[in-house]
Length: 237
Image 1 (tube, rainbow, N blue to C red):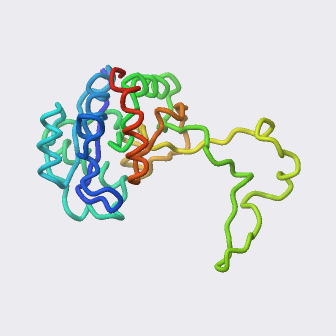
Image 2 (image 1 turned 90 degrees about the vertical axis):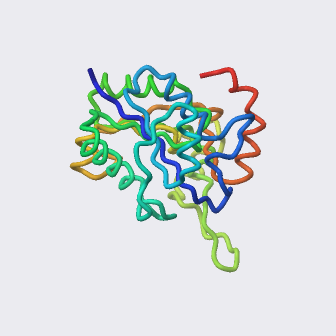
Image 3 (image 1 turned 120 degrees about the vertical axis):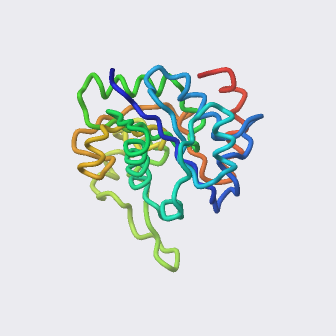
């Protein structure tokens, strides 16, 4: 059997929303939405939470996830790369529980509306294609042809993409579609993760998710929007 480790990463520190990962979304902690989706997915072999917080660990266990270790402080800072946290989890389980999965699926708790079907379908995509990795994306909300930077005195400095595109695609309906990461799913072969130390290897497939399930909670405003959508997703997986 192919073994897939589900890894939920949940730091204690959050500058935008204090205690974000266990703040209530609807009537339950934010992290519980991801735990439930992962536990209801058929592809997840083992589900753990990597956190530096005893409170987050306790709540995660209450909702059914394993918390086999408390994440080291050196991997819990604002600028700690996710790749290092993923590698730490894989090596800790290998060395302490003799568990070594074929794939690791990173599931961030800030994507509460990702479903168990999204998890299973993205895994099926990587299994069927033989890809090293699959990442979830959504259609970009802001189109690159209309994006710009400004000078220090707020002057318009031109569009980021070549000006030749501006006249050709004036209407939204005629512009080519662009996509952006939504942060909901990263599934990668563990050997690729360890050997290449990247979550974007050359053979990476994409799993497209709709805007409504792609909400990534980063700010208090995002959290308010999520609470407006709770009723729509409360009875779904």
